[in-house]
Length: 463
Image 1 (cartoon, rainbow, N blue to C red):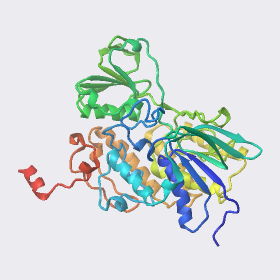
Image 2 (cartoon, rainbow, N blue to C red):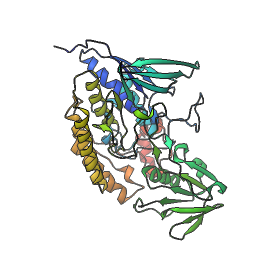
Image 3 (cartoon, rainbow, N blue to C red):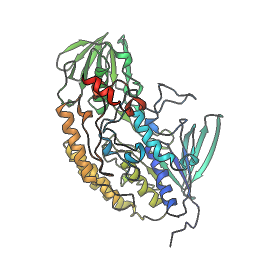
Image 4 (tube, rainbow, N blue to C red):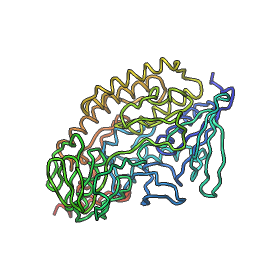
């Protein structure tokens, strides 16, 4: 006997990136089983779905004057094996009809994201060019009121919801530190958020401040596309891989004098441009203080039961707020769990018991020391979500081992790890080798990536 909802609930979703789309897909999967689903409305301030993967060349502000949301850039290729993020209900094989390499460029991954969602009626649930301005919660009615702006027609209106899903991401608001004298630096000074590609930095000596994945990736990309030199400046620990000649790491900058940077170890160097790879802040300007998630970027944000439900008010749901090894498939597992709570299929304990569970995960998070520890921790988190949902299972332990191999690959050679191939845990397909080594591939278009050289082309290259 299929469960029928006795009352049509309304669910608001803020953001149509991978997390917001995952939430829509979770409800559609239920609908495909013949179940009734609540009324769903998703608000997306861009003109298309995809969130970060919906690349725009714009920096600063978008078409309607809103702050640019995405921190995506030209020439970005996946920095982890695609087999680690594969949707378990929509494989790369199903989408591309052939094996592809383990490290696709952004347009290819965006195409994959769209492939799953285009099979559904997700667009019917999304209001594009619409941004959330403010949210309030009525304790008596137990409902959210969301004030919205339709950017196309410049209209402000409000809507009421029983549940609110915040899927707006947390890689949009730059954390921009200050260094004495940087205001007099004569070259470009930008944050990674406004980095849109390496072309403008060809033949330049670059300083990247930060030791995160963005510093690593932007540094290698600029090196690949012709920067004269790349220096990465770290606060506490270096990235620690073996860098090729032309890339190096130095301790933190202390101050600047014109185009000269001074470092903690006494080194001084001149640079043409500075890129701040100093992370992002969790920012939700549409939420009042009492509903706003306040956390640093880590693997288990405080105040979220199961990493999803705002503990003070579980009707408020946050997706994708963790620091991430797992991405698309983690968002899916979260969305499936959130869906089951919103339809009454999943019961959660009282606030005090939820807090004990949160504290257990926070305590384990604090003990993590290595990348392998991080992978194991997030793998256990995914398995915990799978145990309480009907999201199609995948071999999490095998994915975890792939992540560990990826970490080793990068240590062995930061320039060639993207040439490695892995096997899908969803279909068992072994990835194909890309027709061009990553360091020699300067075209990130989908057309170039999927191009299959004719036999005579291959022969001519070998003659």
